[in-house]
Length: 602
Image (cartoon, rainbow, N blue to C red):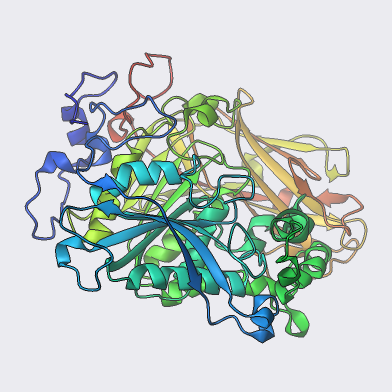
């Protein structure tokens, strides 16, 4: 379709936005490209995008046709007899469906192609083809269809790849273990070494499909040029445990959920009897009992499934994280402080973080059904109908070397709907407000049991501020029984609107996934709790309230946390990451005719 005319939209003008950010520094890579072909997010407010489908569309269609899907089986020679499964039967393979553009004068059957015929590939890799979704040869509504229809006409190949033990891939369903990682790496290498390939591959996906890009990046594969993990896991243990506290699904995630994908009554079922599948039966309950990585006695189940350290060490491409700040399936601590860790490693990174749940940036059905305190107040400004263009600009640069370098940093949306751009996150000018016990007003209760709660308040704030980052709450607690201490914190504003939460098994009082220790009855420890990343607007005159309970939401206290504990409020402290931003710092994403609804988007 043609680029549509500029519209006069609500709330902002282009001239106002230009003053918010100052002069934008653009690296055009030496390529002369009209600026309006690659507008930055804050320059898209008045652009019109096609919002008639379930997903976003590029504002200008490509000129190439979409070729017929190809069914491809990729050999994975790194799977050996020691791995069991098809390492014993022979012929470990991952299966993929591949769509290539139809480019005039290009015959992909030829072993010698002109450079103009070479294309990069965008791939989504996951376990769902034929398992709860269409097969890998059918464009999937969850993402594949959007990729194929938007980007193949622009000269990209698109692949849908099944991980081991799912779809038409053989071997075992390894739940992000070493075998699965090898299969993913083999698929990337195959896609990057074909005669028609320009040698560059990008991986994108959400949830499990957003975790496979992180897995691929652990190898330093020279063909992997960019990854776009959406609510993806930097590690499997990190998904289900937070400071020793387990989500309810933790023990059964491998064998009770994904293990069933590989055992479906066909002739390949015996191939699932490999080490990772068998180890899953023991490591879920063991991690529940300990709260930690269970890495003693040479057990590497969880460490094999931890990706970020190896990405930082080995990866040579770029990263675009997309995260729902209201995602309760894959929490936003997968994005922050991950963004800073990757940035500090010298890897080019951008993050798009909106107030949606476990969803894509452009799916109105999911965005519109969020409850109050979990995204409702930011809707409809959560919807990013410019997302297809955003990804086109990203892939053009990192997979083709065309266009101009994207502006790296963080596009963050606050809980009331306002978007702004930060060069990093938390922002460099963050002020860390230290709040001592004397500044907090606790309730009369001083003990937490299975039913009792403690509340405290702070405020009122003397100006409009954002709490933007990961607030901390340090609190001395004294368990009344050995190991019996677990806490869930919820932060709300003066109206009762939920702002954020934190959780801890106090055997992990220093935080993190390591260092669990045995608590001693009536011996005090300092719990260094940290809230999940949040970006919330606090109006002048408002207060915040923190409610402390034994547990909450879908977190399960450790089996040792049976008794209550006392709280020493005199030793408690809180740190709030504060930034001062005004309406001039915000921009509005294109939302099309939703009308003025009182949302605080200036």
